[in-house]
Amino acid sequence: QVQLQESGPGLVKPSGTLSLTCAVSGGSISSNYWWSWVRQFPGKGLEWIGEIYHTGNTKYNPSLKSRVTILVDRSKNQFSLKLTSVTAADTAVYYCASLYCGGTSCHASWFDPWGQGTLVTVSA
Amino acid sequence: DVQMTQSPSSLSASVGDRVTITCRASQTISIYLNWYQQKPGKAPKLLIYAASTLQSGVPSRFSGSGSGTDFTLTISSLEPEDFATYYCQQSYPVFTFGPGTKVDIK
Image (cartoon, rainbow over all chains, first blue to last red; front, side, top):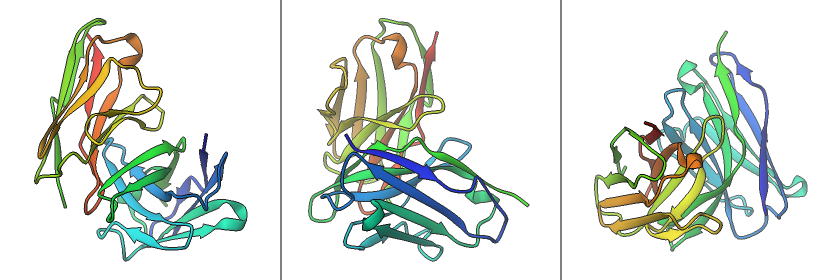
């Protein structure tokens, strides 16, 4: 069973860059899944950030696309998230998750499993 | 983007009750609707995918139905471990989630 674990700083200054890593264990990051980031705001709403395939192909939420970069490191079996120009509105629990992509345009897709999540606070 | 709504936003129920949660999409999404359960301090857990297919290991008291824009999640007989928040999610063109339904103890 694949397991995912997020890591990274829990506090980021406004206008700085949020950087997180997700380590994948119990399976290969080169398997037939996409690898995603999802965040949950303090009010509990969930927002998909983006995803990456082991080939390096990425898809991003249009609302965040200008600030997001997701990379994969096959040698370390992990992937990462960078979010630039952060503000307090980016304060959230950040989850990494495996995404099963079904259909030609991933229109039949679901997130499973998820990492435990890591709280990132944006504050001076 | 496809907007998702859920009703009710919260409900109180007792062990053994039948519970139904509704999710509505702002445009038709066929059967491409998933349900997650989240307990406090934990990550969401996939319960049902493609509207009605139970994820492996999920108890059979959970069931899902619907297509197009209207979907339901039903818990046939509530167990103590089912008190949680439930989210729906659709996949195209951008993954979006419903706002959640909190099920707590009456």
